[in-house]
Image (cartoon, rainbow, N blue to C red; front, top):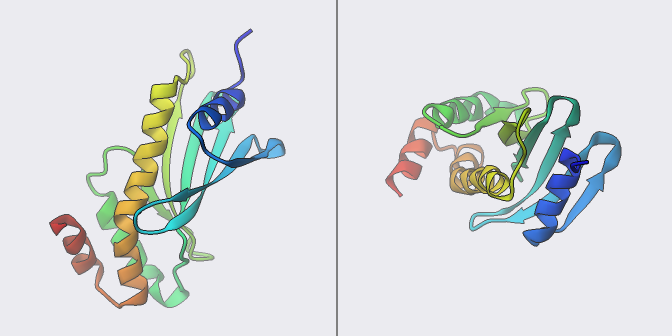
Length: 152
């Protein structure tokens, strides 16, 4: 019998050298990542019955209510043309996420697929984190923040 999707992702993160906490009742793992622009939590969640895996980077700063519309504009602009994954904003509490996911029904989740899914995610969060911080902390407009990122 083949291993569960949760066992597959646990094995991936062990082999790839990640520290994690398993949240068995949620079929999920909580992880930490250190990028060039910050450190944040990640969440790998398995939907076993659908053979789907979702990976989230949780932005280390929360958008205060006064900045949520500007952050929404920033992430909408960032998402435009994004090939793999997308940013999300919880308007209720200001949490910002980057999500990548895969459906492997009828197939399997290989190490290389998992690696691309996870590293595409954390790379994008790391790349866009300075723009998110600029919009929230420095009152940079979303248009200017995206322009600064694209020019680097």
